[in-house]
Length: 563
Image 1 (cartoon, one colour):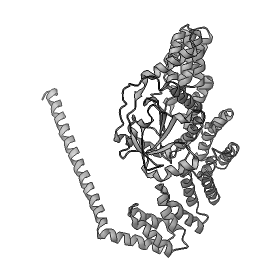
Image 2 (cartoon, rainbow, N blue to C red):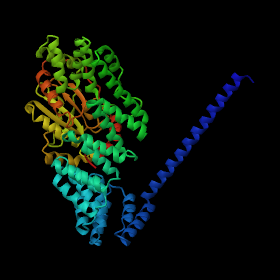
Image 3 (cartoon, helix red, strand yellow):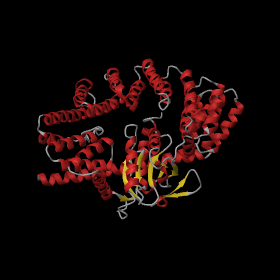
Image 4 (cartoon, one colour):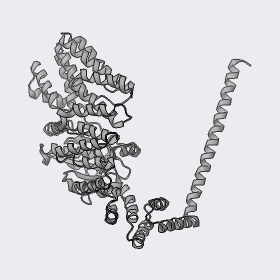
């Protein structure tokens, strides 16, 4: 038999084998589904009644056994009114048991249902040392925007379980937007008492992250390195990435030193850090070349820098610094117009004071005045703008629909996607409010679209408690996100001009770039209604895109700001 025929035969046999395997797998899966379906159907019949009867007897035999409660709750659908009826009955039967109201209260709390509060308060009244109940009460109070109650409940949790680092961390975290000195003290005290825990690493990360700790940032990051460089710590890794970004913008030689230590000593994500050491080396080399009177060579070095870090890991946060650096090299090489054009493009997307100062300097060299600069910037934005598809969503504040087109020719519209338990969302909203204080809010509409229907009950409560100015909107039934382009990260925001066009898209605001939002709004207010009434319409996102959002929600809940 020839090699070619043998090969073809083997291929046929292989194909047939895979067909058999696939058919067998399908049959097994089908049988499993049928079995599960049968089990579920069985629970709807007498077998289910028998099972529930046994589980009820187990609880009544030992009402303080939380495992018995968990088994019963797992067997009953959460939406089933039988669950509530049964627990109200048990609270009457066992009036001294804190476990009974705690069990049902925990179920409601984990589903972000306000009903949890009454049950959990009954539980801690019966057992003031029930730390987990205090913790859940604190979480619900935070969701509703009641910071004082959240602090009080969490203080009870820490007193009831002083050995628990989570509670100590959460209690400190609740002070973040209040007294800065007390917050720092509580966080460092938490690190002192629980130095080997992941929460200690997280606490040091948070301390370094805060804008008001700029002068102390290096000390916090260095302490994080010294305490956790020999441990498997996610917060240590995240902290070192942000430390590197900070150093790269401020002192590339120190960024290089950190990257070298991460490669040689820590030996974690080495490929990621190899990329970062190359970027730091390029920054250093370019600076040396410019100082040596070789700006063309510096420009070639800077041109090759890639901050996306495609090898692995997240992008390097130095886009603005690199844009300014490249413009500096081009200007030094007498290519001032090229420097101006590159910075204009960057500024048109994310304006900052540093970029504007550099642009004014370059414009002066080119014989341009401020009016020329403004006109050029807006011309870029005008060419990139896209017409936003109209939407009509229900407001939580009143039984009425809010239509985007109603603001046409009247206001600039700031739209953000969020949900009440999203940590970064709650970090961002105060910065929105702070920025809006410095613009003409009579000409700005602020819309916030909640993407999590399960947290509907907390939307208006949180808004009122925090005195937020946004109009809260309920997303459509298919989670279409108002017809905006695909949004894969929450929070994510858009700024729409008076003609209904998206000028700035998919941005977030922090304490480090709060003024950027002011610049964005003021510049759209000044120029947005004058040009570009005809633009292409953006493509609406598909209902299926909500799956991508769902994948990020757990991370967000446990990300920056909320437990």
